[in-house]
Length: 378
Image: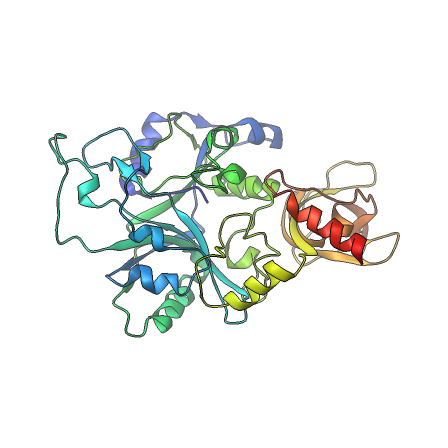
């Protein structure tokens, strides 16, 4: 989902050449600012290394990992620069599920460039390192890092793959804002239109994008700005926002975020996912929320995750608030209640807080069509 896995060189050099943006920025400025790059401290970096890496991950994760094992061929092209890959493979977003098909962890996977895809130090020909091992990097939720490593190690068995924590060597950055959305390629990376555009490991601070991102001036608040951006777009991330061991991946829109392949074959938890996708209708989905008072003014910091959303007119429960930040949030709501234009949604026990749900622009149109047809038939 449009992440940049960067080395320390990126972290120090990009600050020197990019414009900064002020510490205090209201929502309108956040919508129009961009592209913006934020350091994401809530994510850590792990590395898979060894000849069985692709086979190992292919049998575990929801997305098709095999493209990382294919020749690069005609992929994303960069301006030829020594020690920077002339071509790169776009990242893959994927999830690891329980055997029952519930969400455990999400991963953004990146393939670092091979030596033969980079120029040598003279810039006149490809570099070469015949002994370079195959490896993939992944940025993961830092709050469950040890548990995640233990889980992958448990599944490893006799596979020839090493799984290491390399958070001390790499940082995770996110590019987002009005610029990336306009420049992203739906063909290259379908989910990029939602919160940014795709990129791979960028160790020398170079990018395939022609437009340099702004760099956040206040590193204590920049990740919160990215969180607000995701909330506005209706995108959850990590094992806290997507409840570990409980969440149904399809209800959290992982199909629309291109995290699930239905053509790859078996993986852990695949049976429930495939059955629900092909036979069922998703009645609940994660949607962006606004919190307002009865006069339509924004209500700030009065709603907490786990609050129930109810319809005041019918008395029916509509769903739960899963994430809250200021006057915005994410909620897992029944679509019939959330998107029919009802003005009667409120927080249980806080009837003075009105909840306004909206449909993200990046949602596939057939999601609502399927629900409407199923409701009409019933």
